[in-house]
Each structure stands twice: as structure tokens, then as C-alpha cells.
Amino acid sequence: MGEVLDALLDRNRKWSAQIRAAAPDYFDGLAEQQTPEFLWIGCSDSRVPANVISGLAPGEVFVHRNVANVVHSSDMNLLSVLEFAVEALKVRQIIVCGHYGCGGVRAATEEDLPHGLADHWLEPIRRLAKRHIHELSAIEDVEMRRDRLAEFNVLESVARVAETPILRRAWSKGEYPLLHGLIYGIRDGILRSLDCTLSGADRH
Image (tube, rainbow, N blue to C red; front, side, top):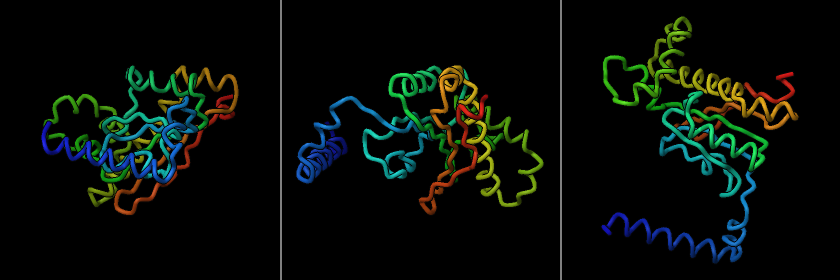
């Protein structure tokens, strides 16, 4: 199968053995129906794994990830995950999480460089940059400017999730799920709230 894959499978077996040694019933519990508290909508960046940076165990967070955590209103993959999480799993917290140093945000600001299909995917971020041009242009450091754009992208994605029929339907029945926007700092490992939490109570 190849040395790299063999090494991966070997690490998996060792990990499984370590878990079973520490908690013999661990996998039996996971095999039962999942009941996560959280839905996590995040970036595909390999440095931002939802379970790891949130300190949550497997089974506690249902995850959807894409390049630059963009919420497209026509993305059937995301909408299917959202609907299943809200209506079947009954999650009570939805987190949209971006991160500083995001390669997708950087690509969206590199207008002179072609990025293939990513250029279409990242179009909402380019629109955000134009909408907030005055604030962004006042930030001299290019990386800080992109990090601020990453925050705007999270805020926009939270707003887009809030406007889906899935959330509107859920909120018509009560306060939950709560919808939050977070940003993750790769350089310090800290999650920060963008203070944009929404609930069904805010929609009435």
C-alpha cells in the first residue's frame, strides 16, 4: 500500500490500543447514536481541526469544513449538514469559526494571481473586501488587513446561516440553537469570540 499509508495505519492501531487501555468501553460508547452539542462550520485548513482546538471529544461536535469557511446559500453540502445537525441531531450550539492567517482569505485578495475554481468559491470574500474597503485600506500591515477580512468573513457567514430556512424554522419553535462566530489564532492557539451570537429570541 505504500510506506506513508502503512505508517498511518500503524499509528491508528497504536492510538486505538492506547485508548482501549485507558478506557476499555470508549469505542462502545462512540458506537451508540451520536448526540453532539455543537455544529462546527470551519475552514478546511489542516492546522484548524475542530475537536483539537476546542478541546472537545469525538461525539461532541458535528463538523462541516470548506475553504475559508464560506457560507454559500446554494451549497447543498453545507445545507444538508446544517439541516441534519439541527433537525435530526438537535444541536444547541452552532459555531462558525474562521482563523487568522487563512490561505483562502489571502487568495481572495490576490486579484492578479489565478487560483482556478477557488476564485469562484472565494468570490463572497472579495465582495466583503470591497464593502469594507475604507476600514481595510486604513490598516497598513497586509497580514493584519487580511486577518480583519477573515473576521468580516465569519460575521458574514454567521448572517448567512441565520437567514437559512433551516434556522428560521428552528427558531420559530424556540431560542435554540444559538449561533456564534469565532476566530482562531494559529500563532497562539486561542479561540476568540466576535460577539455576534444570535438566537431565536433575536429573531422575534
